[in-house]
Length: 258
Image 1: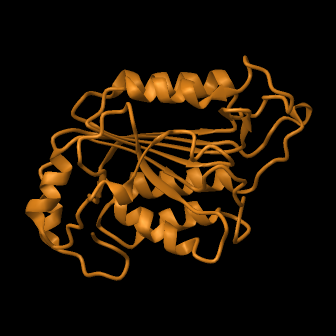
Image 2: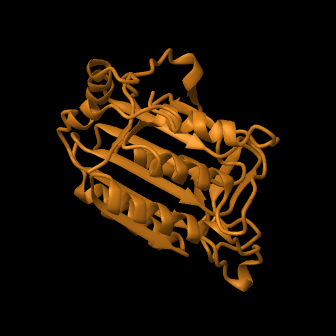
């Protein structure tokens, strides 16, 4: 794995990338007053900063950034992403905003979703999972920075997948890139998560940004380890796992700079 403290191997820039990189970043900060959810500081700041580094530094063909979205806007953005991706592409989806759990069901909360549950205003994790399960992509990772939703995608934890680090080993890195991957990386499990730790970004997003800004090539497992270390003194713990029905093939999502 390439991490913040390890030297960069120029040979990894020559990895054979067969598809295109796409990202959809959703950040809900300013909730409608009538919805009665507290507005959040970090989601808008987080997705705008992540969008900037993906566009400027990494090989992303298109980055769709959606700020303060209602349910229809979120669904439209997911469909717009699905319209342009193919089964050779590398797809990142990032959601930051309120999440809620009722009984055994978990939801993303659009900016106009009322505090009292309504099936037509909240977005269930089962809806999101069904959509992602059928999206065209070779590699796909969903990053979720939201309360209660991290453990909703049932699957195999990365620590049980027996993945291997590839620091300085181009052949192994290429194998991981060639194999299909499906991951969820969440900022927490079935618990509340912090909004900001520096007044601007969540600790989850700030750690992700730091990992991207300080590495030319980095894989999702390395990013998870960096984020996990940043949460070391907190009750909130990040999770990286592969949902059961998404068809993980033993690969890894690898960010490669231009």
